[in-house]
Amino acid sequence: MVKRSKCFFLSSSTTQVFLIFTIGLLMRIIWVVSAPDNLSWDEPTFDELAHNLLVMRRLAFSHGAYMTAVPNEPTSFEEPLYPLCLATVYLLFGDGNYLMARIISALLSAVTGVIFYWIALQLFGRSAALVAGCFIAVYPPLVYFTGLLMSETLFIFLESLVIALAYLSVRGPSVKINVALGITFALACLTRSVLLGFLPVFLAWMWSAILDKENVRKTIAITGISALLTIAPWTLRNFLVHREFG
Image 1 (cartoon, rainbow, N blue to C red):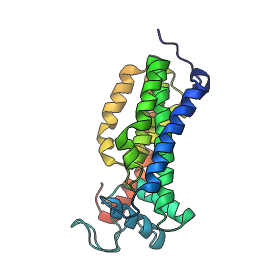
Image 2: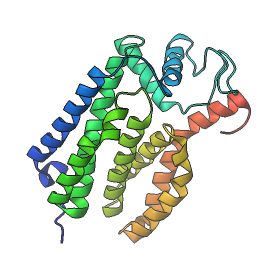
Image 3: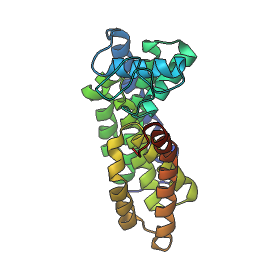
Image 4: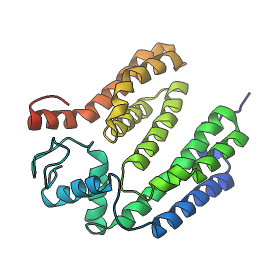
């Protein structure tokens, strides 16, 4: 039987955590520093939305885009969280500071490796955790995406955090953990909305997996309500802008 500890820093090897984080961060920093400074793929879209959040104080395109957006008018074409995060980086470090945005992305991705290490440690033991953490640290697509101003890195980080919090919740539910889980799940949805359709499935899984059956309804309710309340401002904003929910 795998021995599980309630405390991350007591249950894991500090050396292994440091190794995974350091390897992951170094690989990503080397990549983002050497990556071309020009924008490609969907990067111009996120860059423009972040810039306009600073200039116009709204999520909008400066021109007609994707046959849906009206120039300089609020749009919901992209989910709001990543443009908001990118705009925050621009506000703190200068508009168009792509390098700093990519360095922060590298940090998030390196932390993701540590989170996966912890998840594997709880489920399968130290050896499997080391393999999982090192795999995430050096996995080429994850390294590559840190060099792009796109939402993938943030989304994967939030997804890994959802898994970690879900594990804690089903093992021993608490109000704080369940609220954090609901909020984190919602933030992931606000990064990539495709995840929202999985919320009922996710809650159904929690219902079946939670060990404390006496408080299962409370746990599901707190998690679901926290998620919906976090998403609600974006839903209300879209209704006011488009006169329809979405």
